[in-house]
Structure formats: structure tokens, C-alpha cells
Length: 350
Image (cartoon, rainbow, N blue to C red; front, side, top):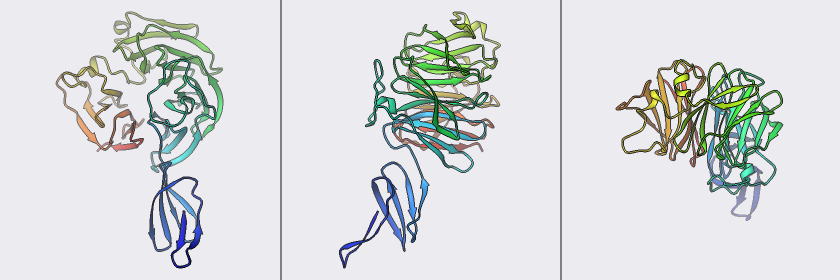
């Protein structure tokens, strides 16, 4: 930021704010500056720079997970991984996604970002029930494991098994396993002590869009782009499809509920739609509510079950497609993240 004297035609003050300045306002000697990287800063008369707001700033923002301690972790196509405080409503940590420019082995995620696929991340998972690690799924298919929500910059492991980008990931409730859903039509399962590959589920005919663990960490429920809802049994020795999983898991308690197909959510699709406009699903901890994010920029809230003919409360705020919606562990908030608007919103239960 440069403050100039119109009479002497020279700079009176020069303040380095670390990014291109897109807008400026002044009140007395205080300056408000909006930066290209999505940050708003305030500069006082002593040139002290105070950050007011930070955001993702390039391509799309998809990655979202919430720790039970109230910390959000998000990732985007701008080579940034952020942690946020729900209570304080502000950024509390930032790390680079990758320092290497690399493409996937095949395919690629559609994005307007200037960054290489390796520097874009569209899936995040927090191991709240285990070692506290944070897994980040990159758009070149790699997964990096971060030390924790308070140390996102420390990479403890890098995995490069998947051929295409990662859209869905989840740690098991016991904390001992990580399931990774890739656009190469495969779900990979790793042990979290060494991140050794336990096994792969290869029965899907399209890219993976959601992954759910059962409460006892023995079953996976997955959905793909071909509208398939499949089930897999998971042991320390491998991953096997259960072709009768829909029947065999009728009494199963699921740790998460991100599958957009199933008896409880048959009514979340408007008439004459094929389901592709619904990007994410979650069910509240008490089980009474369902939330969805869609391509129309809406966060929809339904009573559970949402059967045919059900009507939601639709929350407007995002300007683009909503790619993730998550209830907090206490059920008091829904957290949503928009793709191209790169915005994280908190919706409070009334």
C-alpha cells in the first residue's frame, strides 16, 4: 500500500501487505485494504497490519472437515490449507498444500486455478478418534498426512497410489484406518499407524463421491458417479465387497451419513432430476435433521427421514454451487463451503 502526497508528488508511506491490493478505503490515518489473496487487512497510523479476514482465493474450494473441538479444516485450488475456529469465526492456521508442480497419472479435476493439480486439494479428513492427523487429498491423486489441526504444515506421510484426484476421504471411528475415494473408481483403505495399504475396493464403475464408515469400523458405504451405492467389509487383512450389503447392514449404525442414496434420503431429489445436482449430504448427531448442498447455491435442511414429497428449508447465501455441508458434533451449526465462491459459512440452529 502506498500513500502519496499530491503536492510533492512522492510517497509518504509504503506498507508491505504481502499481496496485490485490489481495494482501499481510509478513515483518518487508518487504512482498510482488500487483497487479491482474499484477505482484508487494517493498517493503523503506526503501519501495524491487522488481518480482519482471510479466505481461499483461486479456483474452487471443496475440502472440509470439522474436529469435535470446534476446529474446521478446509482446502482449495489455491495451494492453501486452512484451519478455522468456529467459536471465534476466524482463521487460526495456514499451510501450503504442496511445493511441487505435478499432474495426475490420468484425468484431472476441472478448475480455473493457475496452480498445478498437486497444489490443489478437494478432500480433507481429520482423525479425531485417533492420532489427530489431518489427511489432504490432492488433485494429482496423492494424499498427504499432516501432523494435526494445529500443525498443518508438518507432513508426516505422502501416499501416491491413486491414479486420479481425490474427492472423498474419512478416518474410521476407531482412528486406525483411513478410507480414500478416488476418481479412478477405487476406494483405498490404509492403516493409520504406518499408512500401509490394507486393501482396495474396485467394484465401482465411476468416480467415488462419498465414503461412510460404520460405527464399529468394519463396514464402508460408498457412492460413485454412476449412482451406485456399494458396501465393503474391512478387516486388517483386506477390503471385500459385500454384494448383499444393503440387506446385511440394515441394523448397522453409521458413524457418518454422506451417502445421497438410501431409504432415509429418497426425497431429497426434486422431480425430473437425476441426483447429480446434490453434492453432499449429512445427518445431524441427534439424527433428526438432514442437510444437503446443491448446484443451485442452496443449503437445504430436511427432517429425517426425507421421503418422497418432503419439503426442505432452503438457506440462501452462497453465490455458487455448495459442495460440502457438515453438522458440528453438537448439532448447533451447519458448516458449508461453496465451490467457486470459495466461502465457508456457519448456519446456527434456532
